[in-house]
Length: 272
Image (tube, rainbow, N blue to C red; front, top):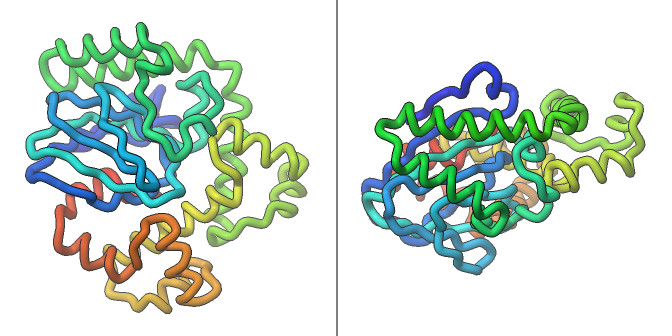
């Protein structure tokens, strides 16, 4: 179940999604979406994230930063999570640490802001009905937005810079970005690392990967066709980049997503 945010949050949060796990999943591939996810366990079920081979049991409330390494998900049947999917350029509006601190990591929010996060979690758990829970979460985000409104200017710059990846067919051309924006290449690099959590080149690679993932999942196109359509040099380059993110080949991914829970894949894995 996916619910759109309020008008005030829509520029910064893509959606609120409730995912109910219908069967036990073990080492399910978790694909980098290009977004930042705040994940709240609203059922008490057990889950764990394995990033680059390192396992971490899912806490009550966690922040899943940008992913650029192979990631797996193990979760028990009946687990229900509420996911707030945050646009990549907007994370700095809601979380105080440099966003690079969260990259390739599932962070227990009690370790970041224990009292505030505990209060948020308790109020969500005690609330009756999904819409009431989401209203509580929206209020939290609006409070964070007000507290961090001085960061809106940098967020806007990042948003505008990131649009160039889509306009330029997911290819990074940092000198052109610098020239068009009037910002130095060095400052662009710093903006991305500090305020988004990954470098411009890494973000461009994730965006390109997501375009290829959409085609792997939703079309019968050959890997060679997908590679060229998504801006890879050739099929070998495409397979290498895909495996760098996921640990498996595009063909294995296509087979897995057809065989397993497509709704889960669409909810948590598919990005731009």
